[in-house]
Length: 96
Image (cartoon, rainbow, N blue to C red):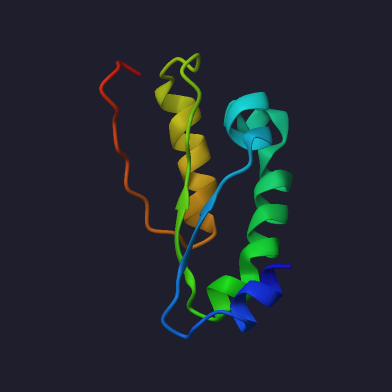
C-alpha cells in the first residue's frame, strides 16, 4: 500500500505519517513494553515514502492521560533518533 502511495502521487507531494496508537496510547511510548519492535515495523512500512523523499514528518500524538516522565521520554526519543529522525517537541496548552 505505502509503495503505491510513493509511486502514484505527484513528485512534489509529501506525506505526514502518524505513529500508531499501539505505540503512543496502549504502550504509552514505554520502551520496556517492546515499542522498539513496533517502531521498527512502522518505519519499515514507511520506508518507500522515505526513500522517495515523500515522508515529510512523523506525528507523535500522545494521550491526555500520559503523565510526563523525562526518563521515558528520553528513552523513546533515543529510539527515534536511532532511526535518523530530527525531533521537534511541541507542547499543547495543557500541562504534560
